[in-house]
Image (tube, rainbow, N blue to C red):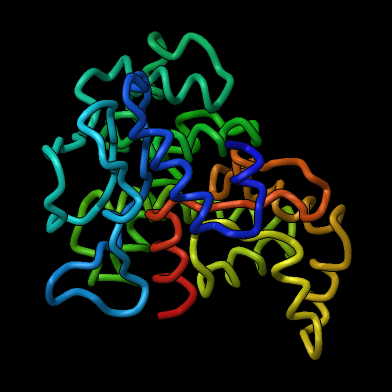
Length: 270
């Protein structure tokens, strides 16, 4: 299976995986299709959309989980993902990402969790930021409220409370990224024009001809590229590709959560 996946024919690799999943008696598996946010549907088949069904195994066993932000997708049984209802779960996310203990007894941490409306992605972003700085939860909450007010003034078209919450936490992280690395900031801006999945060094190096100085510096070598990406990873804006094969031919790829990518497009391409 691994040998097929490492080959150059992706269609053959996908078909081999489908056959294996459909094999009789092979029923102890779970396949997750994450961030299927642009499904090809009747009347919605423009550039960037695609049909996931050819990649689904022809079997009535096993389990398939598809995550999407599209309310129009009609596959299987929909399960709405709601906000966390127990504040202790929110505090656990803050604790794990910020590497700080005793949050159940911290009144400011509880206020922050409540202000972030128990949204896991916002909590994780805030925690990642607090892991990098000495700010208290009260100080972060103050920065959040100031950024929230500015966001309301600058982007009145953002009607969703959840979007405002997420965009505010990412805005605070972006301000810190700007102080740490100009190359990481430029890379984040550039990412808005790419797909959110699988950006890697060699892909960008193909565009070095007549590129601006900062881009040539960013893509000079693996060390410089990884140094910039690591800043974005530290702030939970980007994550390394878990399926990296380590063959040595190409550097590790990186991806960005679909919601984060939507924010970068709103911020840098509007």
